[in-house]
Image (cartoon, rainbow, N blue to C red; front, top):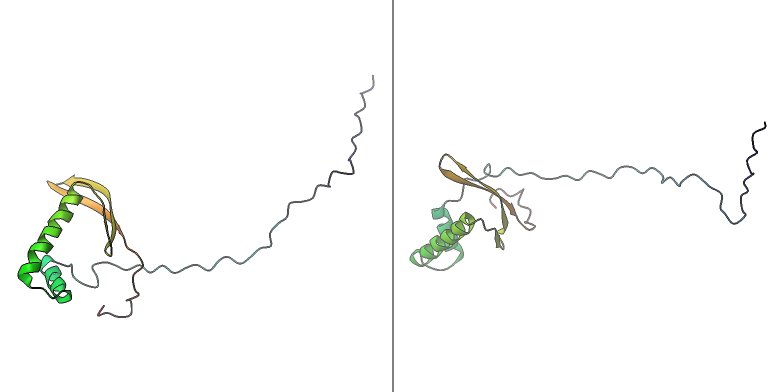
Length: 128
């Protein structure tokens, strides 16, 4: 017995011929961008409540006896909001989001992320 013959295939004139896929020319990789990382706490000491009150008094022309209760009340409200697990969105300070809350050694640890808008470049000026 002979094997059956396969029918011949024809290519129609309307069908385009198959070609290799277009390959984009190789380009040089993009220049890496420089990210400036600053280490908080290295440049200046922590801002304490008395420093905050003094800084507010410098900016506003009010007496300490008028400013201190307002600042203390504001700090209490912010502390209560964080204790409730609420985030803060306070311009120009930024948006504070709580990542997690832990209890260790009888103390509450709130781990937060603070996102600030674009800040002026003060890297070259140590007084700013």
